[in-house]
Length: 86
Image (cartoon, rainbow, N blue to C red; front, top):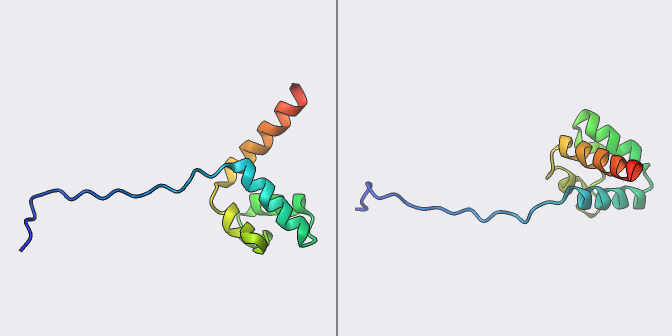
């Protein structure tokens, strides 16, 4: 019988950090390849949280769900502000 008074260690391997700008780029390309308007589709996803706005082509739907919607908005706003005021 195993001793129950010893603490067992469990280490979870972290996924590689998901870069939001890379996610947006890949999703944009996938939507364009499938003939969708990527801006409209991404806005629909961000506003509703419904992943069906994003195509599953090239894993885009799974990829966009790895980042929070507020992170997408932050990245887009940061990109806009940096481009506009720099």
